[in-house]
Length: 173
Image 1: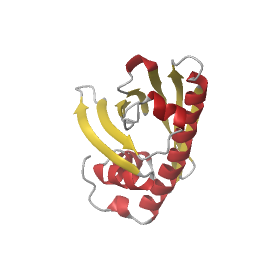
Image 2: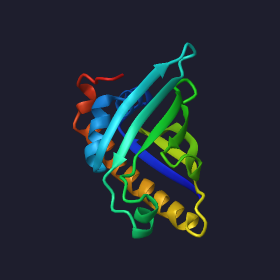
Image 3: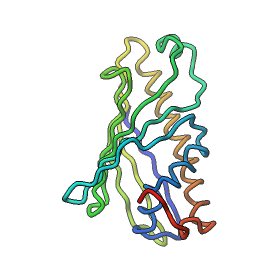
Image 4: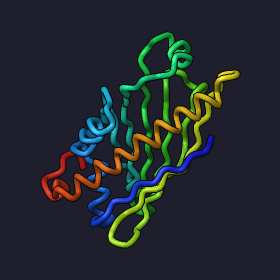
């Protein structure tokens, strides 16, 4: 199932947006804003060409439908979000790795676009779940969760900027 998610942040330019969005300080803010049990950067490597590879471990606090809980055998859901960001091109690829391996796949691209007095972050992706008879329902659930959580991220990011916290020392950049 294909999806598009957009965030728009006002009163910020690209360098400030990048500094805040990829900071550990904002990472912790996102964890609280979207009610995660864990959101930890486990890898951040900058290649010679300037591209950045980040791996973030995520454990959401989420009420799963019974059918999904049964498939997970009541184990908690967790995944790694792998992002390869090219700051010069203002583009990133992303993929989700889960303990389910090939059964659950989420991949896509993101672009950072100047728009008026702010930055629009546009994610275009695809969620694929290979579970006979249930894949489509699980894909819809995943896309709805991603969309709802990124709406909260958008609000947290704007609040972070509006409160001037982006002007404080940002760690993890």
